[in-house]
Image 1 (tube, one colour):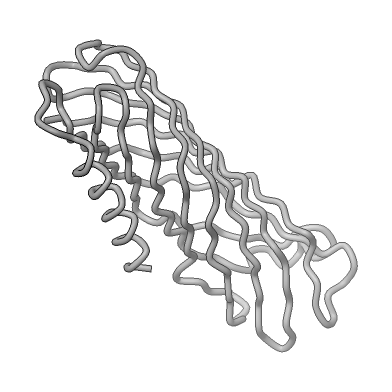
Image 2 (cartoon, rainbow, N blue to C red):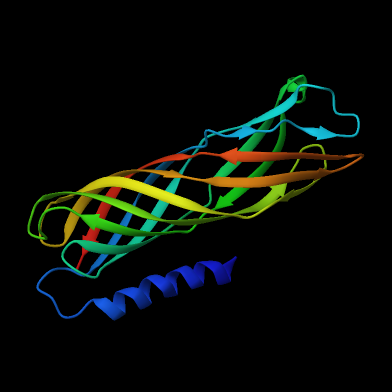
Amino acid sequence: MKQTIRALAVMALAAGAGLAQAQDYPVNVFKAGITRYDTHAQTNGVSGLGVPAGADANTTDATTAVFIYERMVSPNIGIELVLGIPPKIEGYADGSVDYLGKVVEARSVAPTLLFNYHFGQPSDKFRPYVGLGINYTHFSKRKSPYGWKIHMEDSWGPTAEAGFSYKLNKTWGLFASVAVLKVKSELVGEGAAVIKTTVDYRPVVFTGGVSYSF
């Protein structure tokens, strides 16, 4: 996991270093804010020995802090690395087994690399932007109140975002964005029996905060 985050950071810095030169606009942008992670998850049902027909599960949404570094490689193009404090995602039994309540929880570690296009000019106070990139998601601290051993597959998927920045002065500003991700993970629970499901996350992520540029 640490190697993956390090690799994404190296990719962002290497791409920026190779393209950015001395310019009359800020090339380094640090952002911090709050993210609302709406999972929009679906499963293909839960299967396993002794699992009744119609067994299913759903997941909760989460809110966490996010930290972003963007390297401007031209007045309009930026390479962005998004990290955050891993939010806790909880899974609850649904369908014919909804009486079981919460069955699993995990932390979602999801570094994301984006290539952004900023409209307008660096001197503009208000600048909308759009971006495309790739997301890697790893589920850590997996556990179940029923004592099952939980396995969750890592995921790679595309990401798209749209947002805007608003300049307060030469260095400080505000930003807000919305992003959509594709995350898919096979979940296996090992206890008295083995249960399986594939969770198809289609998260919509709302983020807002402050920025510092130099």
